Image (cartoon, rainbow, N blue to C red; front, side, top):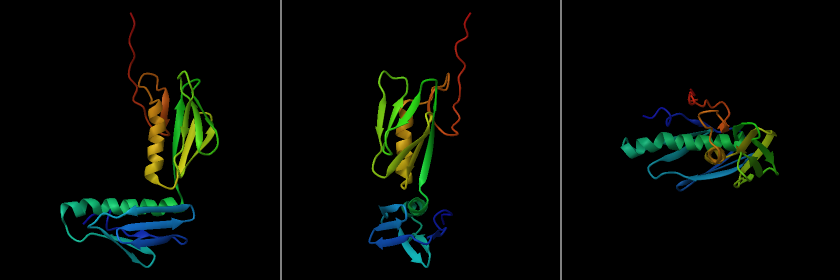
Amino acid sequence: MSRVGKAPISVPAGVDIALGDGTITVKGPKGELSRSVPEPISIRRDGDTLLVERPDDERASRSLHGLTRSLVNNMVLGVTTGFTKYLDIICVGYRAEAQGPTRIRLALGFSHPVLVDAPEGIEFEVPQATRVTVKGIDKERVGQVAADIRSIRKPEPYKGKGVRYSGEKVTRKAGKTGK
């Protein structure tokens, strides 16, 4: 049995869960998320907990069991506390500027500024000119938006310039040795 899949999901107060045929909808103080549940997996509510169950030990059922439990748990956490990703901008002259909660302007060494618009449900904050915070209730979407911003100017291995996740270690290479 999957160790991840058999763990119950606790539902905090103020979170409403609607189980339909093949879908689950989670409503909380921060918003609402909905997802379809894969075919062999079933979700059962037992008081203030959710249990994710699989019908058999087939390979497909085992692989979807823990995944579905993690996705539903992330939905519950997202509508209660939300998710954040922090990005650091490293280099002299590289900076970010907020233009409202859903748009940022990045100066990353190109001949033009890069404008990034947030998709629905995502917000940006720029507490410092070299730090960007991506916030939202959907963990997948927050991670994807942060990865898209990082991909504009990835950290290069010689001087470490670029956009990186907060706490990310960049492996540095030795440069050329001149004679």
